[in-house]
Image (cartoon, rainbow over all chains, first blue to last red; front, side):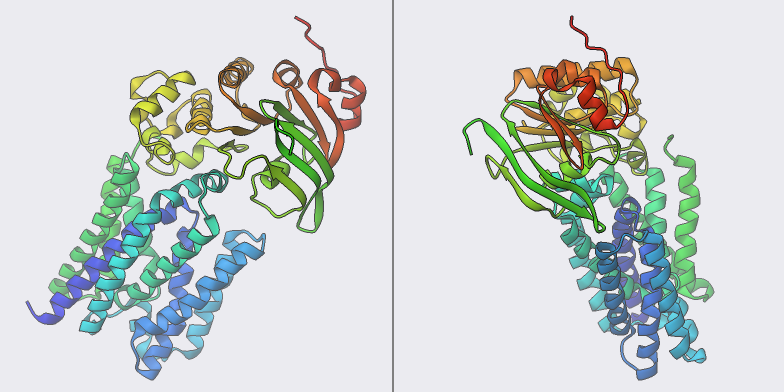
Length: 256
Length: 233
């Protein structure tokens, strides 16, 4: 096994696992679609990074951070439905990237390129992955309660606005890390598919959340192995692996 | 604040989206009252609860007798579908508030959910009556001093409604509880409530239930004649 492959493997294990875990909260928070627009917001950042030769992570994180702040402010300030805010942010992100994205480099920004993972990327993935995991673990039950009812959570002393902000910042970080692996187009899938599959397997919250983490890791490893074997882009292969696990999970779906 | 007063509201004003929802509202709630807020749809009842709970901004004064009062709250229309979206057990739902299984089971038994396997069940799969009992148990666990109940029997049939109110009444009698209640059911108000505030943006009338529930007051409040039969038994 070459070094590049080991770096890729470590990177996807950490990002895939934490993305799955984080995604398990998104289903309950009506925020599934936030991951999509944030990923698309990473596109202009990734395009700038490719143009000016700096790490895609920082470019993506920069534009995502701006987008996340906009969504957070809009959610507080407006009474607009989340879909409207989502549509607005999504469209602006995509439009902006196609203005500045050089066609020759479009593929890397859109669906990622695992072969360009550097030691620095891996270190970032491990450190930020662990930090985000610990933060989400700490706020998990409070976020679930506020997903059931924000009012119930408030009565229990949960500062819903503060936790929503921490949560959005965590999504932004993970999405920015994902861009290198699956590109700006597919980030939402790494967050949502493992969680959706785990929702079908799980009977309790703890099974569900850790199930999403495990499925995230398995899909990522499986995708990378397929990439090594058949040579197609790793990003789409990771997403297809998790989609396959989702299909299997349908057999185990809880009765409603 | 006088000794037995638990809540004092003075000149309360709430504006949402530049529309005045509550205007110059003043009232007081004493300890151990079952204080009902009565009013037509859109009168500002739920908004008043949210202001009292500190969820929304307001003008005027809301003062509680203590800063760290333990509050239990049952919001309006908390739906089972929210629970169906995620794999959560009754135990896990109660763990947000109480860690001991024994205490959770004891509370569930008190609200009439005696099945020992109840802890493993998915709240989304309970019947609507069982679900509402579970929520009432949830709001009561941890010995709250003040309970906010916003139409706690929405979606429950008449028999179930009566059981839930008699259950609440039993808790109220046994514990040192003050209950603030929103309901549309005048019979329930008449039977269980100690004091009533008639609200339609402003206070239309207030006082002890049995004096307040007159046809004249109800017509003033709802803008139409309300037929209400007092049960004197």
